Image 1 (cartoon, rainbow, N blue to C red):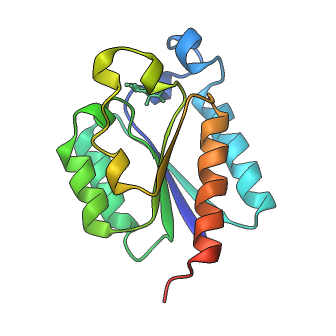
Image 2: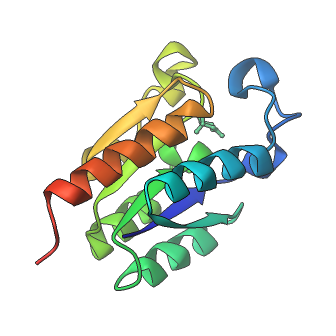
Amino acid sequence: MKILVIHGPNLNLLGTREPEQYGSLTLEQINNTILSRAQKENVEVKIFQANAEGEIISEIHRALGNVDGIVINPAAYTHTSVAVRDALLAVALPAVEVHLSNIYKREEFRKYSLISDVVLGVISGFREQSYILGLEALIHFLKNNPQT
Ligand code: DQA
């Protein structure tokens, strides 16, 4: 089983970026946690971060035929990007949307996601643990719904 984890814009600055919202772990520390959990589950994980919308879209396209599912934190594009939504629809891979912060507890504009109705589900508000929960949920789904 192979899973792609995508981090959207500004998440490269984790560790120093608004720690009261996103916690104090760096992206590298979060990635190491994801990789060690994946290893325990015997799952191969590829991790990708980009600030540019087009790069994220191209990575979603590349996922087709190469991975079994996607865990994505679209960051600010969650609330703005029809293009990321359309890319997920186009590849039609099982995907889970994750957020470090609880987007429903923040500004009004963050409460709306253009992504949440085209993914299996959403995990929001558990800081770095959101990625682990998202990964576990996706692995569970893929084991119970093997591709034909
Ligand atoms: C975020 C929430 C978004 O609203 C924000 O733009 C981010 C990070 C999160 O992980 O909590 O950059 O996706």
